[in-house]
Image (tube, rainbow, N blue to C red):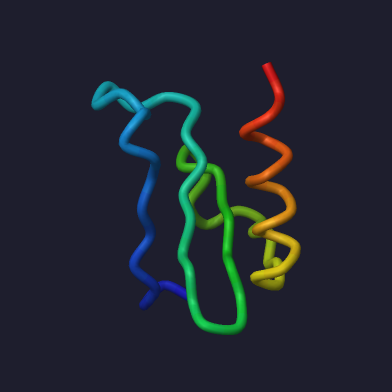
Length: 60
């Protein structure tokens, strides 16, 4: 998966730290911890990612 182009939220600061990075593909969404780029990765369906982000937008 090293050939994937990862991105982080524009809300993340430039100093690094605790960021989540994401790759969106037509059939899968990959998520990883920016501090551990070679560590475990979560793979979700687009439907599961959509449900997660909808929930996250409502959480305070």
